[in-house]
Length: 83
Image (tube, rainbow, N blue to C red; front, side, top):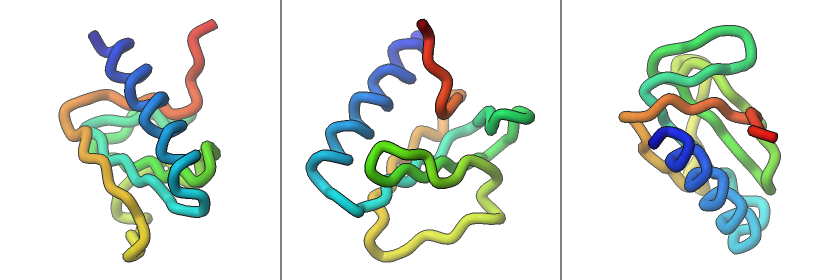
């Protein structure tokens, strides 16, 4: 089930990147793995298909142009690709 959620998030991000060039997509998740450790209440910011930020919410600021996805019930692992 989580694989499906992660795949759907990746597809949504790619679609939004094509539709909204230079718009940042901000994803809130219950837990994220930022490449170092698992964090509670994390955020991932993606612009043009590239991850700009992955980490705790307290170090992140939203802008008016950001599109927000609330996935507060999932574990998000940005940048992880299953091959």
